[in-house]
Image 1: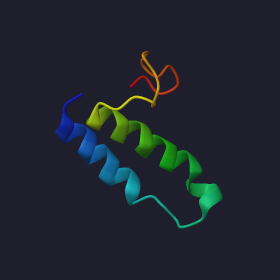
Image 2: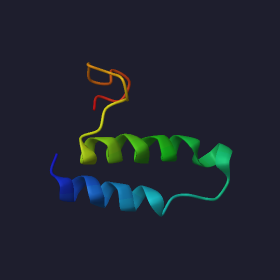
Image 3: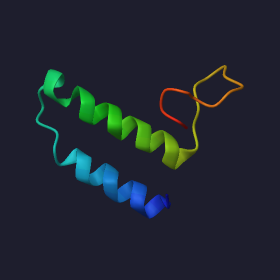
Image 4: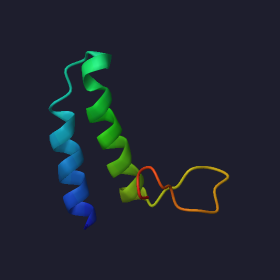
Length: 55
């Protein structure tokens, strides 16, 4: 995926946030995973790619 596509998906998901933590948890998780892919980040102290999110 290109960075522009990732950014567009992140912005789209942000518009769906309600302010209710319980309702927003899944959306925030999706946003976090996309941001990690966009930034090329993997968990600290890890020599391996993140299995949970695919980063």
